[in-house]
Amino acid sequence: MNTSGLIRALYDLIYPSVCPVCDRVTSRFAADICPDCQRRLSFVGRSYCMTCGKPVDEADEYCADCKGRRHIYDEGRSLLVYDEYASASVYRFKYRGRREYAACYARLMHERLERKIRSWDPDVMIPVPVHKSRLKKRGYNQAALIADELAKRTGIPVDKGLILRKVATGAQKNLSAAERQKNLKKAFIATGNVVKYRTVLIVDDIYTTGATMDALAAVLKDAGVRKVYFVTLCIGRGI
Ligand SMILES: [Zn+2]
Ligand SMILES: [Zn+2]
Image (cartoon, rainbow, N blue to C red; front, top):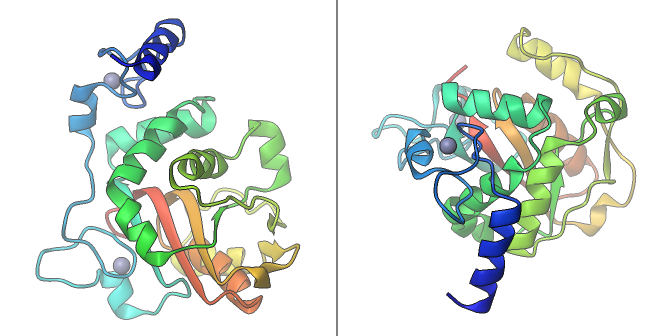
């Protein structure tokens, strides 16, 4: 073991990592996720929609959603299928203060999506902002935590102040795609000079219908950004 390995090992002894899947101290020394737990996760495989990255049948190039309409963002990829393990983990990450999961999430995202991210060559990462009232209540923006951890690994800077969430949109879960879009249309506002960026990578925890990504991409493109991509931790199987 080299010096940095030793320091890491000592650090782990004092501050052991909590596994984002089982929420227990990781079973293996110096690991951020239990090997068994990692095997339980459904990683997006080789057959995915060329636009949104959702898993599709091998013969399909696009998912049903992207076949039917154009998105405002250009392209995106996600690490995990939003199944029961992913949803339970993300719930604790968002609502139970498990900020530390971000490091493991970002490591896995970086391992599997780095090549794609590099090919997009983004100038900046923008985490999907939350409304300040929600930020106050929760204490952190989960998307920003992931973006910060990704920045450590990729060197791509994060800009958290550029886009503001204007209105508290409330729970989007029970709304239809059209309702979400309408609701979100006025939700984001650019506060500064967006034009300095040509290519933006949006970072979030979940991609569901793409309404959030499109709303944010619309604001960015209106302000002069040419290309808008996204990475998320999870993606829903379908709408
Ligand atoms: Zn575990
Ligand atoms: Zn798609």
